[in-house]
Image (cartoon, rainbow, N blue to C red; front, side, top):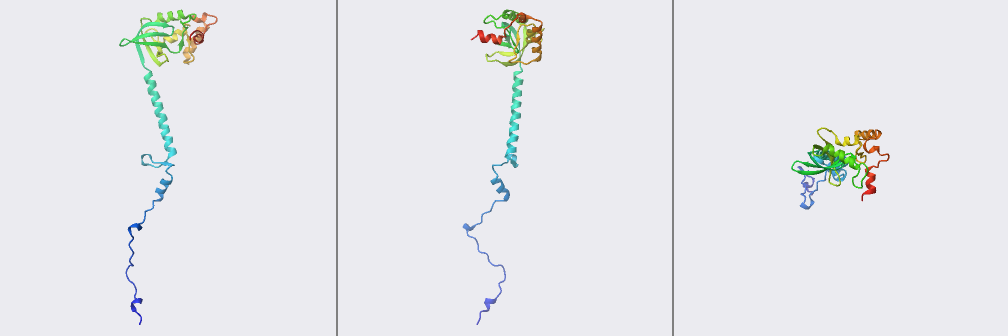
Length: 220
C-alpha cells in the first residue's frame, strides 16, 4: 500500500540553510570605487573633488609661479628704500661715505655711472672726484637704493636739494662714463652721447679709456 504522504503538496516557503560564519559573502566594491582604485595614479582628490592629477599639478604650478612673482615684488619694494644723511667723505667720482641717522655710515656707489679710477692715476680721475665733492660734500643728500654690490656698498641714485639726479649730472658734465654693463637708462645713455659730442670733461681726451678696461690693466 502506497504511502499517501509521498503525494502530499508542500505548502509554505522552503527553509534556507543558514550560512556558516566562514561562508559569509564579501561585498564587492562598486564600479566607482573600482575606478578610483585602478586610476589612483591618474586622479587626485583636492578638497574632496575628483580631478585629473595633471590638471591638479598644473594649477599648483601656476600658484607657485604667482607666489614667486609676489615674493619678488616684495623684495623689490624692500630694496626701494631711501637713505638720507650727510656726505662726510668722497672717495672718487662715483663713491662716497654717507653719515645717516644714528651716526651709521654707509658707503655709497652711484648707480649707472663709472668714474675714472684714482688708483693707478687714470687721466681725469682727480677732476671727476673734485667735481663730485664740490656738489655733495658736507651736504644733506638722499639715496634711492637700487642694490648692493659685492663690496657691500649701497648702489643708488643720489639727489641733493639743488640736483635731482647727481648720477645724471656727472654724465652730463663728462665726469664719468655710462656704466652700460649694469644700466640701460635712456637718459643716461643720451647724456653721455651729448657730453661726448660737445667734448665735455673727460671727452676732451682724444682717446679716453673706459674705467672698466683701465681696471683690467692696472689693478690686480
